[in-house]
Length: 151
Image 1 (tube, rainbow, N blue to C red):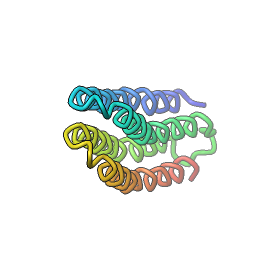
Image 2: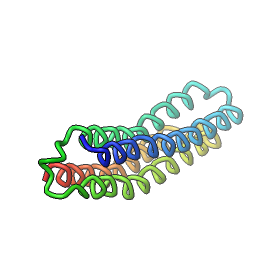
Image 3: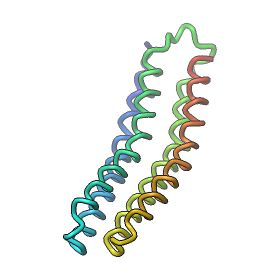
């Protein structure tokens, strides 16, 4: 394990968890506002909040996987030590966008559930579908990052 690998692994986990925490806090805040609007639906809103936060958290888990891969790879076996940076960028930049949009979609869905609780099932279906489609971009980049690390 090299010092460069430790730095990129730390950046992969440290920076993403700050970002994930920010969007998860916004989803939570939107849920609290939705509960204030419609206290009768508090359990349904809370379930949606937990589900949406868990879906947004998956991108952070991908970062953790890449950080572990960076730590486990033998630097002597790498053709180019700059692959750490390439793998980090492969997950970092696209996943930043994925995290932003997943967080935004989830936050907006929870806000709208608070305004129109009778449409909560529709919001849940569309939100999960939308987040899954956005998440597919993160999965493609996860494969790219693995190929960069293990090439």
